[in-house]
Length: 238
Image 1 (spheres, rainbow, N blue to C red):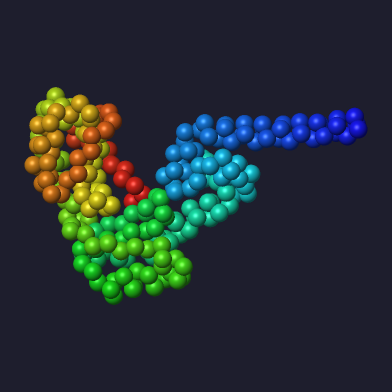
Image 2: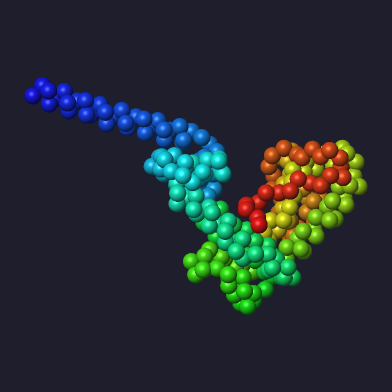
């Protein structure tokens, strides 16, 4: 009986030891803000089980080297498919006058393509190279402005900034600017210290209906006032 009892105790200790190791591994992964942020933005699970599975399978899919995080085989394949679909569609539709931009929803992986009109023939042409399964990854939306219209709104802003003194340029606290297809706006990011009247001036120059102002981060310090503004990063634009 004593031998059986000892054996049972040893087995329990072994199970506990394995549990501690697995918990520790999961905790280490959970403590990595980069991995958690990447998974959340990609719409992947951040549960200890998912993280542990990613740790086990990442060596086969090279996700650590490719993305900097450990992913499961299914997750790595999902990211590959998300990138493959726009590649198979190509770029011809981007030359259409009514094209309003496109982006990938990082949560769902769906590719959103916009036009200022709803033309079924254009949509059918875009979807033609895809399998039935991949066609479900593409979503079309109708926008108010074309991509070119919004990108052209930056020209008067750049011209104005070139005309002001270095002190006034700094007062605007510009962080970045660029076309935002998801919101169908031209987005300008300014510093938290940018005065309200400067923000209003930007709106007047670009046009209030065309611009989206975001207040965040430190102002961009260009090498010269004539440098281009740092481009805005708004989701996954393609």
